[in-house]
Image (tube, rainbow, N blue to C red; front, side):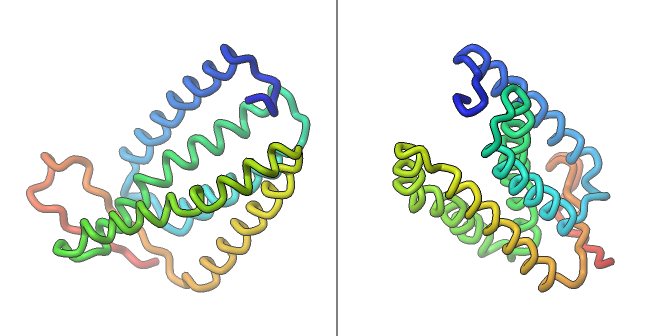
Length: 173
């Protein structure tokens, strides 16, 4: 918030409005689950995250709201989306283990990078991390897209009560 010159009150407004917008995005995704493409969703979130990190280097003032919204919404949309993807691709007897490992692997980079980020921020060199992490995201998405030849659409169950059994429907384009 300091990076974009938001006061504590302004920052709380930014986070609250980002949360509300994220809920709207999640609702939209829930209603249009049959039309979601794994490849497109992951690519969009990754590109927006890399762009947001790079934009956070610039002194863009209040326009930083867009950066914060992008990063906040991206993270809070990606987690349930990936959970659903893993849920549908995993056998029932291994599902809990796979989801637990995925959760662990999602938080591991933060734990490992926190001292580096803190040190860079203390020495006013956070830009180095933001650039390197953006490049890492771009490289990861290029590798993902080059290895993922076929796109997969996943029909997410609307609600547990609406379906007797969660049967994944995977359509390959």
